[in-house]
Length: 120
Image 1 (cartoon, one colour):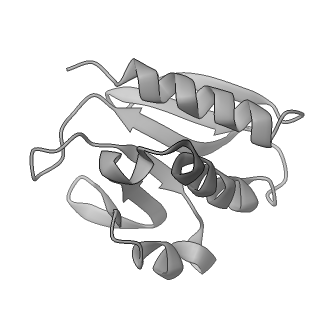
Image 2 (image 1 turned 90 degrees about the vertical axis):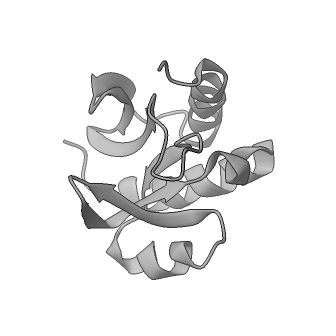
């Protein structure tokens, strides 16, 4: 299954608007497309479906301090890698990204963590 190219383009556009002076790059990793900001993994798209058979949506790095807060959103859940949850990383269901303002809010949350880190 291919990644959702429409969502990938929306992510690119929104990240460039929110962090126009940051070093933004993409890498194919984990069977999907991962976006790096200043050398830090920030978000990713997968071509796979989640365990419920839904579009996988977007993986975000929100950091440990905002992790529990993010999980309160009905479209957000723990991101699991090899069956184990990764603290500081969440998955946003595709339904929670339907509106541009929702995508912008999630990416701004990820950037608030990543841009506070020293560049790699």
